[in-house]
Image (cartoon, rainbow, N blue to C red; front, top):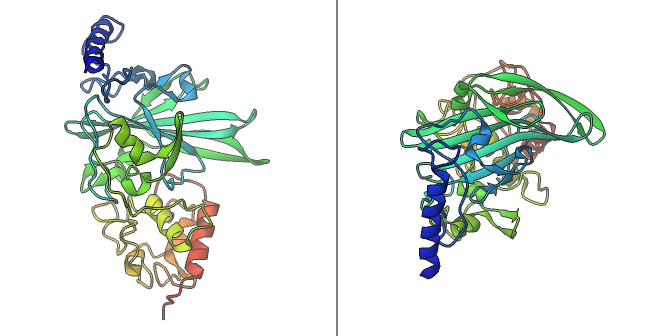
Length: 366
């Protein structure tokens, strides 16, 4: 009890000090979510965000390009990640003091509190010429009382700051995959393009942080722990069931080919092809909790649109070459390719996975 009272007193003192700092008077600095925990220095004023500069939020300590989170900014990962022209991602979550997300179901986004922030930095390791790290953009989603907003920050050349932009753009990135030098015209999305992937029943929503995707171990600075358990311990999640039907890491070849392919389709395609999404008018529902039904996958289902050639079925069981889905994921034609945005390159490993999966299906189409 004494420790808790001391924390409150120190929090009040800290707030009074910071109100006289360089921050504007209506900014606030988060007090501990867990009683007795150190203060979080994140600065978040919901009336002023999005800030012009990423550094204004104070998400990271030290050299901002190192992406070392301050107290209260929790890194996280997903079982499988959306392909974005081979860019890697660093993900973080922050919530205001005394608030937490709520579990709804395995396959639904957590119900985040007002003020919650999701942070995702896109970057390339082994960048040309010195095999260093090249930060490209940091996308921030902030939940206001009126709903989620997008804020996209593009990193400057020396990676000392990322600047808010609402427009689309392109950055040429060169990086080494092993000894092979690759080049991409990386496309930075506009706010409107972000919305096309994040709309659920015409409301902006995150895509990744669902229990089914978060249910995995993460190597934190203080040790390895299950992510959902860590969120609960930190006060960022109210509860979660002991058993969660989860996606898997599609790159793990020791796991079922069917689970791997369904997990890949969920994270890469279900943000458009599922109920209430941008392409929900198609005869597919590629959400992980729906693809245990073959017709939702499009197996032996004739396409209603997007027909490009001789493909007679969305998925022709046993024949990837006759499958419209396979044609779409290996195309780079902007009028043909799927997903519609977010990539310009062929995801060779993902295409190989889907080809193996379709070719090995037991159900064939007559």
